[in-house]
Amino acid sequence: ERDQSVKVMMVQRMMDTIESGKEYAVTNNVTEPSDLVVGYVSRARRGDRSAFEAIYNRYAGRIYGLSMRMTGSCDGANEVTQETFLRAWQKLHTLTESGAIGKWLQRICINLVLTLRRDSHDSPCEPETMTRLVQEKSHVSGEAERTATRMDLDQAINTLPERARMVFVLHDVYSYRHSEIARELQIAEGTSKAQLHRARRLLREVLRYGKN
Image (cartoon, rainbow, N blue to C red; front, side, top):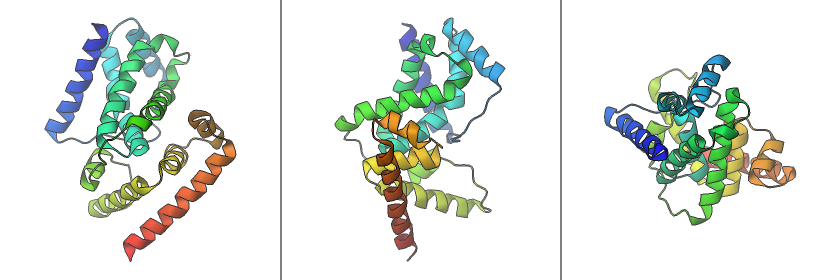
């Protein structure tokens, strides 16, 4: 019953976002006052759904962005995001550092992507949908130029081979170290470095071709 209540909350929040026309506020490095985060986690552990809802509202955009870039699929991203927070609700008692919940949620998300990827047959996002849902903070002047840049990059990332895409997203977008990527993806550190080199080379080729 508690799990179902949280699931209903998450679905409602997603529907509210879509119906209102609002965009997920995706950022790659969310920093929160430690006492605020610890307070939310502490209350959520005691079954306070409103505290967990606050956690969801703060981190759903980041987890959705990671999910979508890792899966290359809107359907897959929605599924992984919901399942990430459902598992977080179920396993909050295992979180040892309440202030590190962002990284903890990312690990749950990555593990889910790795578990589900073999059986995934989701359709890729349309470029305009991808751009709308995954907004990155940018210092480029001009909204039209920012949107075009995001669209180009997101489209290019989506063309990468799966392993190269995952390594690129974790390293260059979410600032994971190669040692962390190797542990999360269960690959050698050297393989992570090779895949990043491959991803960057392919992205340069795709973006260069797109400008010709």
